[in-house]
Length: 612
Image (tube, rainbow, N blue to C red; front, side, top):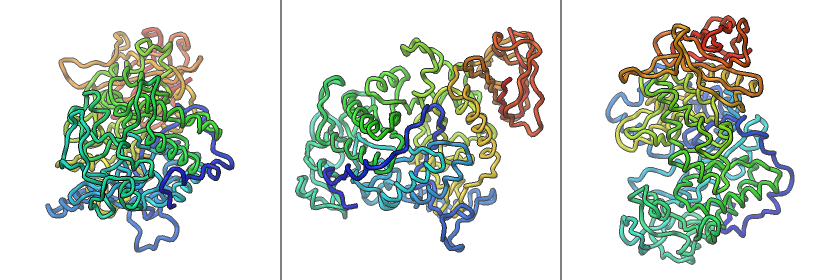
């Protein structure tokens, strides 16, 4: 679109007309996180864009295709190397899958960054992930065009889907080189050798040279050309040491200088003002519904607060009164919530304890109290009710980083029991407090396995196949709406949509009993894995919805489950709103046990949802 400066942005044009209003309640939404390069190229047989020749369509994956790309060491090396490069997903491809997403029951697409990426040096992993921008005013041509982004959002809105765009303020891509090949943070500014031109040669580190490098080199908008737009302190070594983790570079990604001052008295830099202005323009141009703000921990609190304030005000001017800002805030829960509130962000994402404890509950590695306690102690957070967390924390069990895993990272379904328990993991995610998020491909049981170094790539398989297909295949797509997990998750999400208590009610982990006499929360004995019915209630006003999973992947289990004695009497029944058992489920009579209780039986890895 030829824009080099924020002064080129026509705000009068993009703010004309009407805009899609914000949702009434973000806790009603279900997010779906996808990476454009790894999601769809629009050529999948049965789900393709119009006009794709038959000979160019990608067939649907079958179980016989598993491992087909790694049968020899040479083929395996080729498949692994493909994961370090651009695979070929596009914005138009995403648009071709909106029916697939709407039918699944998700309601909002979280799309990782789509702006033009910095070129890489030979031997480096490509910036297919989108977190290494060199032009904040243009969509990367590998994804498509700005017009295609706007078309995608328009079509998503017609499908009833919101769109949240991932945005990066903390850093740009590898757009300049230091004189020292790999300087580390010492608290001092390091000398710079020059900007990278379009062919990755160096030109002087001056605004004039940067302007001349357009469109393929340096960084844009032009407001980032002055040298003091960047911190220039070298790469972070100690990720927990302040101010190192705020001033330092993420490896080769270059930290942007945002300004100075306390959170209450912060002076934004021209660079931060320009980036904020640019993102406001994208908000209006594409009619976006929210931003996911990357790496908030590594930004000054005042910078995040400035961005949040300006964006919220601009969005309100367009009639988007609840334009949502979800911050990636790694760290302890109390610290993350404090950061969120100080800066004006709407929700926190990146709380590794949520992912770790959710997975531990479903796989029996830890007591479910560990997960539910994250939402129970509202006094610790200075809140009068734990339901405050219903729209301020994003929950889930997989994402494109999986930082909760200390070793080689993989998806939930990587271990042998994962596929048998993943529906239970989804049920726990989408029926407990928080804004639930589905990571792309988990509904198809993608396993994220590959082995070797640079494991992040294996979490990011291409659902549409090509050279880096799922399950170590090639040229096969996995958009299978007939797969049991996809089908059952869509049924669970339909119940969630129909039951307000599952979205907005308070929640309680329920005591269970094998004999109907001795009740307690599922716990481990002698360090063994917990194999049990795990149950919880969501209550809104006088309606209780009871949810339960069986975290045993091999054996049908039953247990008496406590329900609210004030809402139920002996002889009342709870009917099954959803059950993963193949046969119809009879109503559950309420008995006079532990106050009140019902007897729940579920198949291996099973899920049940019950209400009067």
